[in-house]
Structures are given as C-alpha cells and as structure tokens.
Image 1: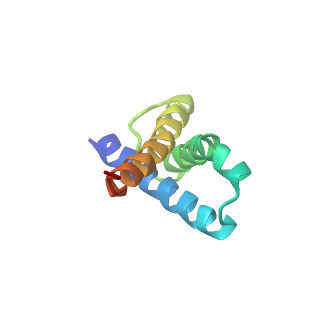
Image 2: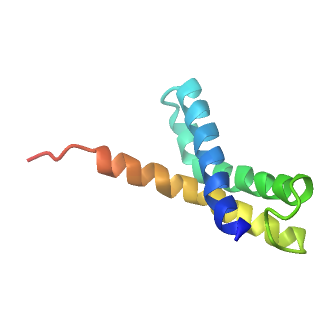
Image 3: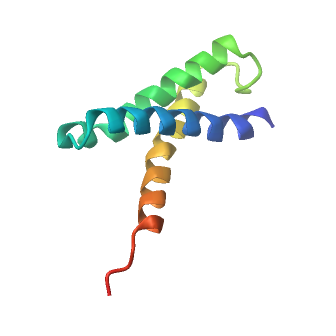
Length: 93
C-alpha cells in the first residue's frame, strides 16, 4: 500500500525540482535535451533515500528494486510535464 503513495510522491518531487531548475536556466536547449535522463537519476536518488531513510515506504527488501521504482517514478515526471503542456496548449484553428 505504501508504494502506491510513494510513486506519485517521488514523481511530484522530481517534477518540482526540474521545474525550478528549468525556470532558473531559462530556455537553454542543451539542458532541455537531458531532462529525461536527469529525471531518471533524480528519481533513483529519491528511491534510495526513501529505501534507507524512510523504512517501509518502498515495500522491497532490495535496494536495486527501490532504484528502479524511483527511476520509473522520476521518469513519469517527464510524462506528466508533457501531458500538462499538451492539455494547456491552445488549439490553432
């Protein structure tokens, strides 16, 4: 049950961090190309932190599974960003 809550929490944390960094960097295209990779790394770091420092949040006995859960959750932040961007885009008719 706790993992169901952990996945969106990690995605929200990564989304917020990326949004802050993206705003601080401005429109740097080089940075934007690496956003998916950065979200995977940030998510994996969040997974490890959750595994070691908040026991029971990620219901696994293995740190590698926690890394994979965190990385997938972080990558979902990129998808969330794109969904928000597409839904807020105005139709050009």
